[in-house]
Length: 116
Image 1 (cartoon, rainbow, N blue to C red):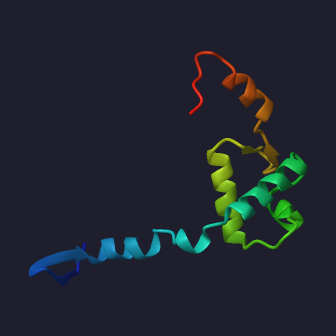
Image 2: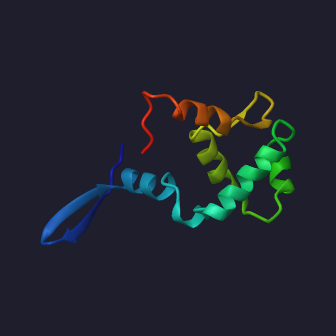
């Protein structure tokens, strides 16, 4: 395996980075800042998913949004909503809204649950 080393000067110290690591750093790290949605956009997408729950896949739902959203930003929002268990996808790719505010209120009323 051929490794090309870069000689970088930083505070009079030499730092060597292999070209393999440099290529990974350039290609595999996503630019999260460029695709950061606003809270308003996340809320709009969440409300649309709630309204059309179980009816559309992600492409069809994207077309139903009341305002235009960049596709990459939309995918970041879907990943976020899935990670916090507000939405789920079935095996056909249909998006379902699974968050239940009523259940959350019941759980928060329990004595052993402390609300911060």
